[in-house]
Length: 90
Image (cartoon, rainbow, N blue to C red; front, side, top):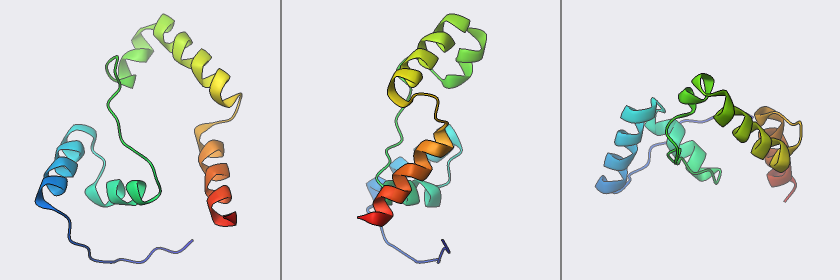
């Protein structure tokens, strides 16, 4: 899929919110807009950041168990690819 640059105007409050997310996560505002247009939502991890999972094997095992229950052995890339293919068909 090729990408094309466009210019949009957003409400000042939305722009400020996206800039805050950019400062916290490093996700550029342009990428946030792209994700929102694709139906994704950026949310904060309720139990802290994912970085602390590497230091906590019990938490990591819990997250892995939830992942396997929801998605089986698929990787995140495989899940996103299949979701995109479903959107293209509809």
